[in-house]
Length: 336
Image 1 (cartoon, helix red, strand yellow):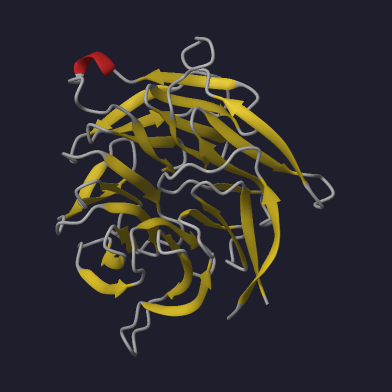
Image 2 (cartoon, rainbow, N blue to C red):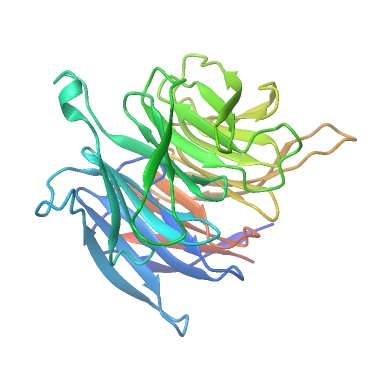
């Protein structure tokens, strides 16, 4: 399995050094619809042209709570694909914004209670995932996971639950992308200390397992076929059983801090990107004969680039896109 570099896509502004700073929206059928990356208080939004030959550019300035253009910094952006609708969710130092998928209309704004926190502690939201068919989960710097109940249309978004298992700032949240085995849970949250929580979603969210920290921050997490894939500050990828929290494998994947993971839902390919300028493609599987759960497929050096975002562009994992700190373009790679 090999990939080669394709034509890159220019950005109006560079990408900030934030975890998972690239989001991809795919349409049914796997066609790439849009990409986005965060820089300061704005989001670079690239929509694919109808003819598939180019991209239209938009800068989305975070308007928060009806105020004028905000000066607060965005921390992440992600499309949340639910059966009834697709929302573009932005997190920042002040709160959570939900837009229609093209960024045209703000659907909902949730302010973080900054007054409750001491001035010495940063306040922000980070970690975004669609879950359970009608929920959007968003993490906060105080370790809470807010569960928003999303109506099929309209603006009547409500906070249905607050999950209180983490003691440190949430770094990432991911939902099951494959077919979860019975009892394996369908949502995982990670925090700055490296603790992972696996949840079962529903009218009430249930904590199924809590995977303890081991002295290293977990920056990115994914969930596929009951396997939790977690990327850490020491460059390791660790794979756990979602149902039990048991460690299945640990790989010294990168020489520096991992900033991004992604999974191709149809094939179980895993993409990792890190500060060491490398992007790796792995294959997750459940091989009953060998017991193997991960194998290495491809390595790509993005020269002199601190990779901060990496996403597959299709459900099979035949192409992927990469952003890097201070890089004013998105690099694309396709399978040979």
